[in-house]
Amino acid sequence: MATNIGIMDSAYFVGRSEILSWINSTLQLNLSKVEEACSGAVHCQLMDAAHPGTVPMHKVNFDAKNEYDMIQNYKVLQDVFNKLKITKCIEVNKLVKGRPLDNLEFMQWMKRYCDSVNSGAYNYNPLERREVSKGGREVGKKSAQSHSSTKNSSAPKSHSSHTARRNDVSSTNNTNQAAKAVRPSSASNTAYEKQVVAAIQNILYSVNDDGTAMAEAQAMISGNREGLLSPIAEISEEKISSENQKRKSIVNLDFDAAGIANLSPRQRLSDISNVHCSESPLMPH
Image 1: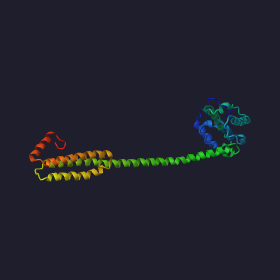
Image 2: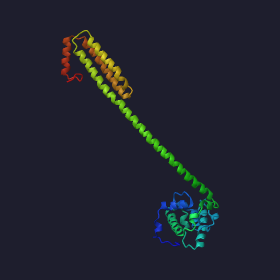
Image 3: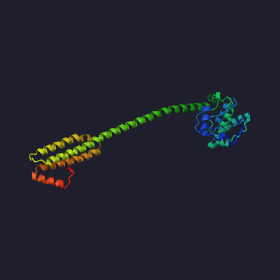
């Protein structure tokens, strides 16, 4: 048996995760840190698993919180070592302080020793053996609750991730629909501007003074204004502000068109010449 293991033995190169997995699977516990076993109760039960019936489990205190109660557990462990003629030194003063490195090294030795024995470990019932220990039943209940909570927590995570993906798809669809709704507005603005320009040209090039061209231009402007501005108003306040500015420009154009209608043909031709010379954006080049 590996009662004396050198400091360079492979046992001392075993990682924390492997040590914790071994403790939890052997004793059906749920330790998350090696130093949580600093009370000595876990060590006593590991020896009980390696040598069934050797450890007086009724003397083991799993509820030990202070150093005095922990030392009592290590006394039980030392008695077991003496009975089995194990010469391993137990540095109790270091272990009860809960230092991670000290507890890891001692637990590495424990694993190496128990692996070399394997006596009755496969038929060992840790929950039943802890029933006679102080705080042993409570430790078993906490372990069972932690296992069940871990299983239950996995399902909501998958559901929440599925919900998040579904929300992402929905938001993407809404964005695409909004983009589609905005695109026609730019085309509508272009068509509207073209109609305004056409209306003014109709007035400028009219040779009749009966006001017919003026009436047709006003009908074109008012008709396109009603048909094109309604969907734009639903997009955003910024679009509404922009369209209000356009409406004001249209009203000014109406007044200008009315004034043009009252001019003589010679005055109209003079204005047309001025428009071409100033390169007005309303006239095509």
